Image 1 (cartoon, rainbow, N blue to C red):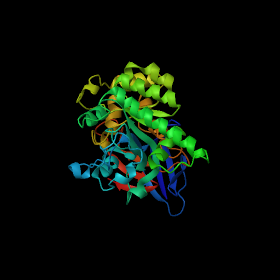
Image 2 (spheres, rainbow, N blue to C red; image 1 turned 90 degrees about the vertical axis):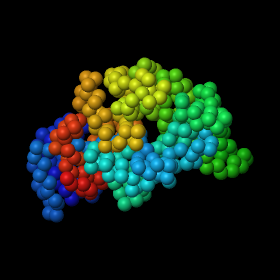
Image 3 (spheres, helix red, strand yellow; image 1 turned 120 degrees about the horizontal axis):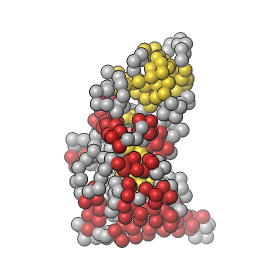
Image 4 (cartoon, rainbow, N blue to C red; image 1 turned 120 degrees about the vertical axis):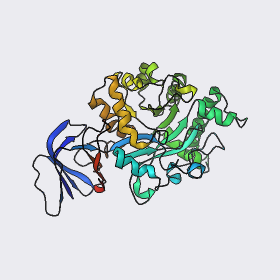
Length: 382
């Protein structure tokens, strides 16, 4: 049990509360009020002059599955032998000892992440949602599957075009995605028909979760034309989708809004390293937010290190968005996009106690992480 006393509490969903106490019990937030009396056995944390935030969330990264400093030995992001690999799971390729996890909460206050396979394949495999601290991956994972990673555009074209295989064009990218979604629909149809005697198929079993809307398709798209293709396929199969990266999202905000697709925007603080990034701008976040699109700012770690997440969000202040709106892009918005908003993303009674005490405004580079709690356990103290 912990009683954090006198902090400036940024609840995200219920405003900012000055000189307020937060009581942690059983791994959850038990009470938020002024002058809470410490129960017997509770450790008191005096937080006068400090700011308490929910742990930040990165809704698109590859921490642990693309390890830092380990080169090819630690890169388990893409199985580049087939453009459709829905039977793969990110959880099976994550090394919990990747130093990126520790840096994320010690330097950036990031306490949970969506980890996905890469974008070499049209259908890459299942993404998981996890905390950034734990003894093993199984301790860290909150949900083993929160989406099916898919990809359009340059990456699958390059990978399979270099092997003189299909897909090597955007037409083929879309056809592979359609073909496999159709197969999954047929698989479900035959599975429900006792006379059809459908044999078990792990690939189709996993992809069926998308058809049944148990999880969304998490579709990697940079260019506007690829985003439109993702919208088109989403409509055709009546599935739920998330646009990953959405680099050109500022060009077609009305279409994205009409399709009701959330966007994970980023990484924004990188150079125009390939053709698809030539129109990259932090203004994308503002344009999408102002058009009513749910936006999460992401690092795509290790493209940008996870601990740079609050810096990426802070950079968006230059566009004129309010701090309140920007804070949502790394807390409650990514929680919603990942289907985890009932567990994390804000400081509310009953939610998992993923909390970070900051010396000041986390969007400013001179602010320091003072203390971190994950699942109610203090896992870092400066």
